[in-house]
Length: 210
Image 1 (cartoon, rainbow, N blue to C red):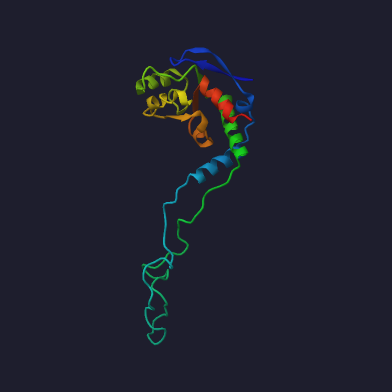
Image 2: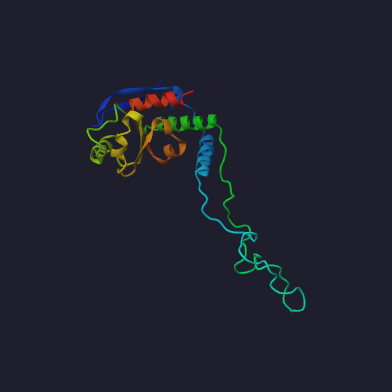
């Protein structure tokens, strides 16, 4: 069974936490993590750019000039892509689909791999509990300064019972909070350190273990 050091909010070591091998000791396969990460980015992509093709451009119902006898090239519509103000050929539309399908089993396995990698690289930090005397940023800042990785980015994992701590964290630089039931590969890779209370670790093991 894997173990990590346990700290209190003052940064003092108070023991260790035993982690489930099923969640925190998986073999890391980069290609699996990459596939899930790319799929998550693609599924979260929003469609912004949009152009109109010749069937959507206003006007052009009348032939610009007669077919023969003018000496000019023949044209059938002002909506043609070669006209100024005409439709756009092969332009971006709102019908594009960027989403990628990843099955639930692979998504959970990639999550386990990333958590295992955090433990292997000593950037998974366990704390006794994630509760502050008040929800001011000052309290959370003291915690970050006392724990390892004070100058690095950190994702703080909370249970529903600890959600008040998220208010103290939200204004900290390089730091974000997330629910233990909402972990995902993109957010775990975005931050160097993961900080979780014992209660959050238990919730993670219950939610994501096989």
